Length: 262
Image (cartoon, rainbow, N blue to C red; front, side, top):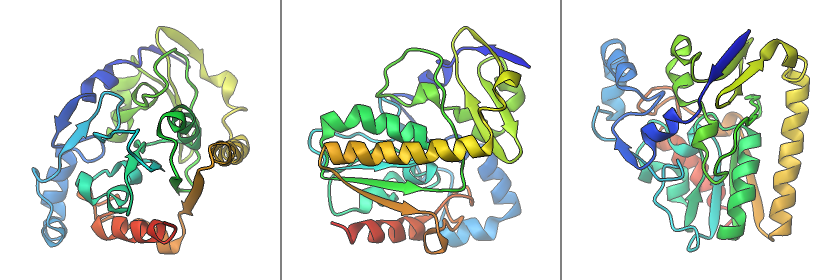
């Protein structure tokens, strides 16, 4: 199977813009929940205009001054804050100034990369990492770009389930319940040749290596790494606006766990 494509259009769609909805927390999904689960939306107080997704020039949901921050937040959509207001995210509830580098669908590869390129600028006292062990994801970049920016490496529209529309823009393959990504610009990729590389065993050990690398970077910069792993007491509650991600109480719980280390 061969896919071709450019990985730049999704970047331009969100960077430096403000939106009421975002992939996964889409207007279509909200309307579906409003029809099928209106009592739940009403109980949680969610509507179609209360959340603002403002994405900066690097592709992060933050308007941060990295040189004034004392901590970095790493993670995926639960750190990015899908389905909650920016000020409700766990990173905004910490007792310190935080650069939130979370992005939906981020793998540990991605967390390592953004930490590697941002830690020199931020030089944080703390690196807070919200980690979900059962989500085996990989990142393979096929193009040159600004490595401080995540968006060119992330398949935002994958979360909207529009796989059939993405064949011309992205390289992908779904294996079981895991989703693996390939990214490229004017490149051709033969996916069948990489099945051995993207199996669960290799992905597991890749995660271990990424964690070791993150720990090593933190040691080199004398930053304290605080890592929370998805266990029962940290599990997301499905009370965000999309009724999938963690809601307000989830973020408050995560923030309280991290604040214990400050």
